[in-house]
Length: 532
Image 1 (spheres, rainbow, N blue to C red):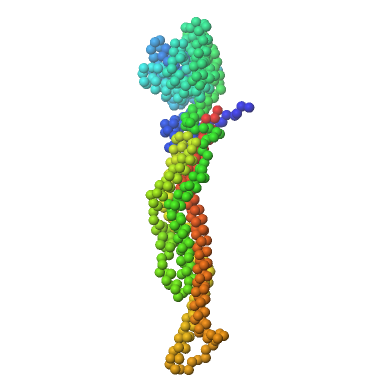
Image 2 (cartoon, rainbow, N blue to C red):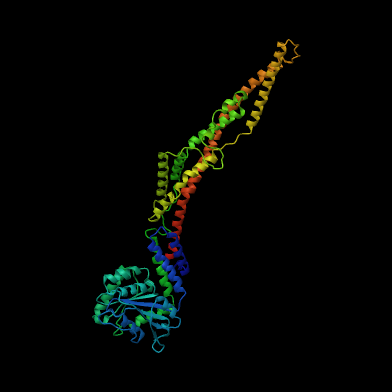
């Protein structure tokens, strides 16, 4: 079943998007040509669509002007015998109404109108024949005129002669680049009346082989003689058929879009094939995360979190008699600047040159692995994307560490601290009670009655019990703080690793994936623009 062709509007839109996606990645000249096609399509669709502009091109002496006069049925353009006489393109118009803006856009000021009495058939109405200068002229302006109009007309009629039909210049410069324009190219071998009968078929067969080598298989190839009229009826019928369909302009723009799309794509595979853009390898991402953890001093921070937890636990739940000694020691997290602050920065030492080199190598290897299988120049764009935000890594890691390393005091610290102060108060009360009893005895005053707990007086119980229980509670809290510090360190390690992974994703992985998505989108749009 024949696949339905995509609408021209979809193909032109896809080409415009492909050009935008290729900006900065593909040769600017190719991007510019694609945008020229888009602009030309917009301009051509706004002009007369009932007219078909057919350019008659050929070399010096090929008989282009004679062929145009024969098709017009009148001597409208000047004919040269041995030297090029056409310096500016001339137009022969059947049905001129509405053709003015189109010819103005083509910049063809010389115009001839074929009247209704001359026209052989109604089907010719809407045909515009352009007699172009010789493409092999010694005058540069002539060649530039040919190149300009060959690039924009709806239909191309290449007139060759038996002496120069195999000339490499016309095949390499004009016919071969039109390999995707088979639907809008007609090749005419003129002056066949100069050849013996059997030689005509041999020349036409050879010409078809040459065109097939140019990629122009199945292009109409007609042998004619403008002088004798041989083959002119077939050429006229073919032109009438193309003009009647009114689709040559669209076929030309579609072929231009396909050519520009294939040029943009270069050596990249089609979107439906294995594009090589497999994505970001997770193993390389893991290597980058490990390098970033070392550069951000994550092991140092994790160790500081455990020590800080134990330090703060001792200052909050330790025996009040000796707790002040703990406060003389610096807090491990404060020493590293890992406490909440408006600046959100740390006092961690900067990464060493070895660590910086390791991060740089991991970023480069990740970019190279993601670009593996992606053709140039997109592979270079992928590798560049990997390093596009590398300079932000250090600050992002520092801010993340400052936030992730902060810990909160457990609620039980307050209860344990309150208990310690209660025991300290009991111990102080017992000491003061005993001191009062000692003073009364020293002053030889009668002592007040002292309650006892068994054999021991309550002042002694309070003093010794408060001291023993305080030390015991402190030891139990110290044991709990060691376990809590280990848990906090594990939690901090997970949080820091998640933070490092997030930063690696935002600053390295996401730019790579964005570039790969752009590449895949580019391939999709190119495929739409190049669809047949």
